[in-house]
Image (tube, rainbow, N blue to C red; front, side, top):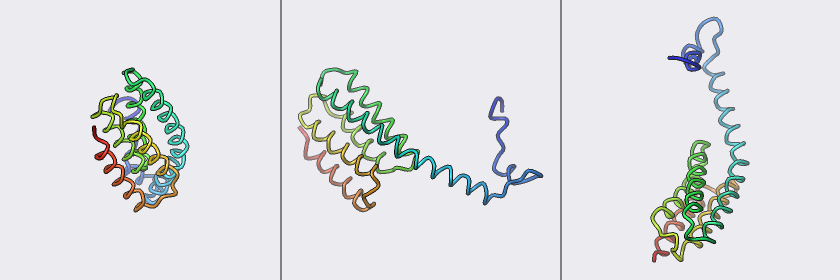
Length: 152
């Protein structure tokens, strides 16, 4: 190993020797870090959702501007992957589903405004933390059915 990686200690090495830290302590630190990421992610998700909404409005207003659609897809992919990393599975799922719909449909599809609105509302609901897992699963099912019914 070279560079910064050579200075990292493995979990096993950290729990041994004169400067040892117990596994329990290391796990508590990891749990605290994960909670911090999840807590801080909420603010990030809210900001990113507003960015996605703005980009969607711009793309829908100019259906033939490929750069606007690309920017929207990139923002959705970012929201999807960052949500997954932060443990916000439903946000990730809804953003990914919308990204998939954008990939397989023409930008001139007359149903895109409805699909975008439904999916972004679902992201907002998931990000609020107010809905149960069962409600979010039911919402996912309804989104899938809506996408199927809103074919050309």
